[in-house]
Structures are given as C-alpha cells and as structure tokens.
Length: 306
Image (tube, rainbow, N blue to C red):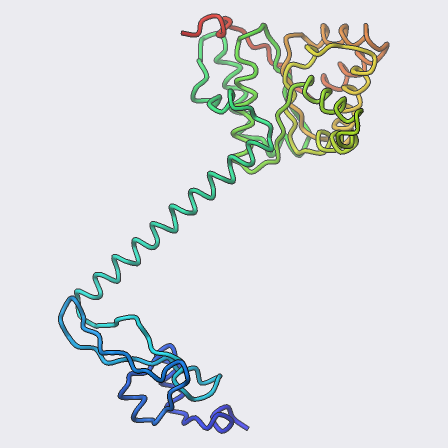
C-alpha cells in the first residue's frame, strides 16, 4: 500500500508539498480543501512586503507524514522582489559572520583551556618566538629550535627532544614556553612544568590530597613534556629517584621531552650523583641519547628589563 493511499493524499499534492518545503499558500490550501489543525484555526492577517509593497497571502505549514492538515501558519515573509532578496542575502551574510565570531570565541576559549591544562602560567602567556629578543649570540640556537618545531612529527616518532642549557636569564624558559605555544597550535598534547612543580605535586599527595600515581602517569604519558630548570630543585635521594623514574619511563616509551637547565649534562650528572649514586650517570646517559644539546648564550635579560 502506498504512502498516498495511507494518508489519502493526491500524488501531485504530495509532490507540491515536498517541493515547497512543506509550505502551501492559502489558495492552495483552499483548492485542495486541506483542513486546519488545532494550532492553525486562527488565520493571520496578510503581510505586506516592506520593499515593494506587495500584499502577500498567508502560507500554511503542512507535513504529509503527520496527516493532511495545516499544522500552523508561517510567520516568515517571502517575496520575489529584488529588495527582499537583497535583504535576505545581507541577513544571511550577517548570520555567517556571527557564526564565525562565535566559532573564533569558542576556539579562543578552547585554546585558553589547553594552555591552562598545559600549565603555562600567566606571566608566560606572551612568551613566543615573535617576542624573543634575537641576537648574534642566540640566533643559531633560535633557528635550530624553529627547525625542530617545523619537523616535530619526525621528532615525535623517534622520541627525540632538546636539552637547552645556559646561564640564568638568557631566554631558556622563554623559548621553552614559545615551543609549548607552537605545539598547542599544532594540537599536540603538551605539558609545561618545572621539575620542582612536578616533585611538589607528588609531595602534596602524601597528605591524602590526590593520588601520586595519577600525577606520575600524566607526566610520563603526555605526548610532549617540557621540563624547565632541571637540576635546580632541592636534590635529595628521594627527588633524584623520582626524576630518574620519570626520565626513564619516557625514555623507555619513546616519549619526546624538552629540558632547560643552568647546567651542562656533565654538571647535571654530578648533582644527581651526590644525591643518589649511579642515578646521575643513568640520567646523563638517557638524556645524551635522546636529546640534542643546545648551549644558549647571551646577556641576562632579566637584568636589562626596562
């Protein structure tokens, strides 16, 4: 049995209803003797086009799949004049612009949330490659880091990172944060943290505030971990074990890690060796294998801020 015989709808009428997006003029409604539904008993007044002055007949909404009746009356004016078409086109352009504005706001909100989860503090929000002060001393390292980010996919496949070391204030953290921003833009899961923050997060669980294993898992499994100021933390036997365990976990799982430090790898080894025998050598060995060492030189920018 066909749809038309079920709902007793003429095939031509059905085609007209579908062609007009379920809308029929009042003349068509009267012609086909389509009954008015309970929400369409009161017929609205005729509308006048504000652009050409034509009087427009009422139009009813009919859904043949829900029974042959006028469900309600359309309150939207429709006219074929140029003025109406131009107004509708402008209205559509404004609608699309508003959608784009909302989309930009949502993207910015999403970006801020990603930055928050990435752990980039407010004081570092403006630290990017454009705001980095390039000099003849730091330009080679700056260019190397830019090239590294451009080819980050290759680095991620091999678990290759960077070990950026140099004196205080030369811009190590600035470049580390700049890399974090670039990785976020590439939608790469990234976490920025100092080693001290990592250790303090674990310590905070000792009083029952969270699970230490959850923190270790986050740091161990994030796609790119940027560890700032390694070796600057208060080195103890416990902290040396924690740092080594994190480095070793990421090393074994081929996870990319970027480090900044005031110390060369040799100096870093000695720091951890004093705290836990053989730990320093193990840390140095893994960092040497997986990280390109970059010696960043320059003046202490913190002393030359205006």
